[in-house]
Image 1 (spheres, rainbow, N blue to C red):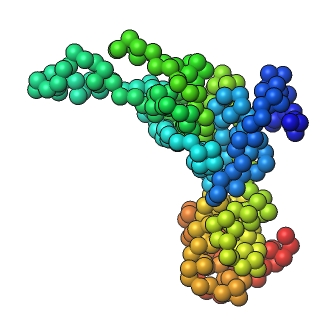
Image 2 (cartoon, one colour):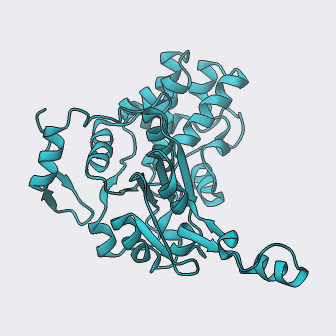
Image 3 (cartoon, helix red, strand yellow):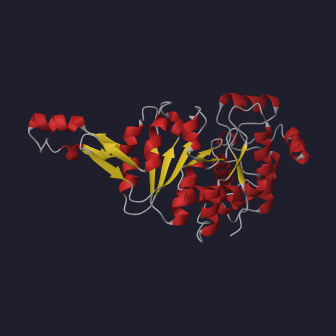
Length: 320
């Protein structure tokens, strides 16, 4: 196969050429383009390519992007398209790397010792594998989603490095090493709440999911609403992208909110003429009070079905 690209834009804005080893893997394998997107997940060519790079190299894929761009759903789409099981590790502020490997249930052991239940000397009974551990012992390759890695402590990503590099971890309580039977396809998402360590970034394949263009969004909407009228879809997208143009908004509407809005518009029976004259169900798209106030006071929007203040919006849409 021919190499269609030779560099990727990394987080610091510089281009790094793919290593020769990467090139050999990609050009010699007959099964490089494994991920092609899922039934209800439209992936851009760039996203499909970077997913396949991560799979080919056996590296974790770190995905960033504004909320609603499909970071979390990407792992679900990969699992669906490749017919693999998905394990989801939802990271919280209190999560540690050890939690993903295993948990030693000392409380249960103390209770058993106190009430004389079970063989408390058998520590293995109180070792429960975490999500990473489950992925390691699986009999088949699966997809592991580590969701919102930046919610945890700053040391959390670094603490994962050893396990993700060598695909094994040690349990000192039982003196055993858990080795991955198959290297999982690891997808890690981040909302940019915290800076991730450079050492962690070096071990990941990185991709920033850009917000969908109107053309790509049209394909996404058609997947969810295949029978929507083209004129209605065109009008809906114009209104949606006009909202996103307002830099004063604290939270711009996302893809999922657009789909919700279209769904309620279709279910409510709003006509094309009504949609042209009004901005119904604004609360489906705008979720912050200060954003609603801005749109009502300065852009002539309404929070109901009133036919008011739409001339300026029509003029702005006509300019696009």
